[in-house]
Length: 466
View 1 (cartoon, rainbow, N blue to C red):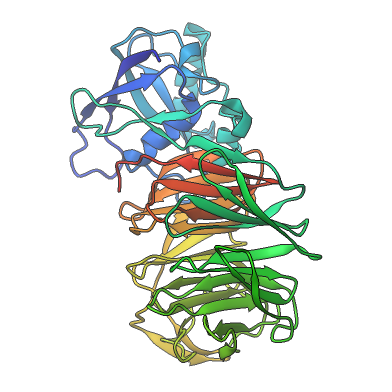
View 2: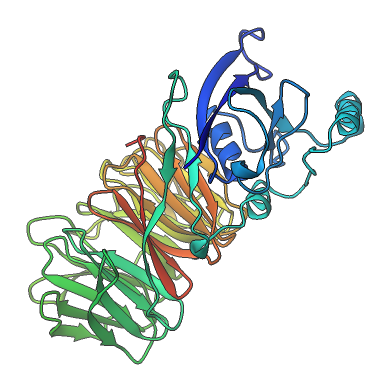
């Protein structure tokens, strides 16, 4: 794989304390790297904003110091002709407005000098990725990013190298779950099929068939049980033998949306559905232990950390409660009352929720509320959230890595993003051919599974951020 070194001059941004400061980064890129996503990831590493004060997406480009021409963002670095050691400036692409006539005139001058000027688009940030990368599962292309940008000779990191592509489902996959040892995956589809298969090679170990779509699955943390939700039925299976141990089709009165397990010595199962309720089940007797009925609209997702549960609803509310007794920990969270579609809880208590407002709202410890007040829906937590903006359509899936340092998100815009929880910026952005409707990390955090249409992709994620 051919590599070249490029030297990035990081010019000061407006508002910097020292406007004369300039930093130089030596970065290695490989020829197979897609230019567009690489540039956007570099901008994220530099801490550059993705939207301006008016909410307009900001797109970035590389301008050569020598010759002043722009590097095209389409294709791969192999398509770009420049010698190793070339100097570039990373800069935002500014719109042609009357208030910025000097910049427009300068760009006109650059057009006259060079035939490799970037054709500008005024679409959203992620539309740029769609146009410039246009690579998905079948392309065999991975994107190289920088590691240790401040070191003299950094080694590039290739993110999300595809390990396995499981393609035995006939209709869209809605859910996937990992065995505790990380060697086996179970996935379920709207065609009613559930497969249990090996991470390496995708060899099928067993198959289940249901008469209704499978919306949720969850492997117990002790490895003994596989929980499957189809229509309004919760089914408990022996994970080793595939034998049905128990099923309940009466507790829920509408289709299920989510399943999960507590992390304790004797795990309890949880289910949530469009009947507005969540149920805690005994992992031994398979009987309901707690019924949570504090939502007034369909529960779209649940997430669990130890015995703490978050459920999010179509009505735009996120409620934190205990699986031990069904009591809420504090008032509900609500950002703008738009429908919530996804939720994630980290092992350290960080809470992420996403939905139809296209934004991921993050609380560093969702178990604690500092300020709350009473309203129509009960106690309302007023603690401000951190907002992660990278999607242009509804956020359908969220998943924290086991150590809580990375957050994966998938949206209706077909975009998969991996965020640094600490920096709160994207480490990786990639447009997929299908909507990432389910995301799940392996227990080690080295692999990420994603449901993409009727296929399940397993990627290796060697990110130094962990």
